[in-house]
Amino acid sequence: MHKGNWEGEQILDTAYVEKSLSPRLKSSPYYGYSWWLANYKGKKIAYMRGVLGQYVIIIPEDRLMIVRLGKKRDFYPNGKPHSRDFYIYIDEVYEMLKGEKN
View 1: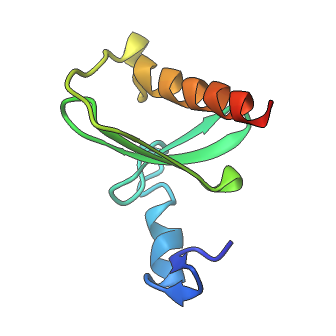
View 2: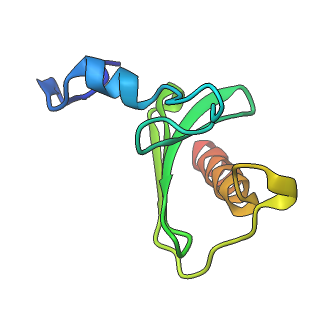
View 3: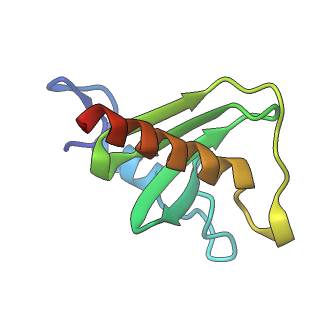
């Protein structure tokens, strides 16, 4: 997969995409340039989140994008950088995808 490329057309510069998906500061490894960064179940994940629980979650390894138009935001347990609902949305999408394969 070519970063910044959509159906053979380079939309964004690859170097920009790489930089934006890298931690901006050593003291904050969970944040890049406008993207939150996570590792979950062995997958590298980048996502954007809105104040009311909106999400755009990208899982490049599986060529997957999850969009949630929120109305309510969940809390962040024990000072962790990612809210509990973030993990729930990912798990639910993978469950739905398993059902499609059967």
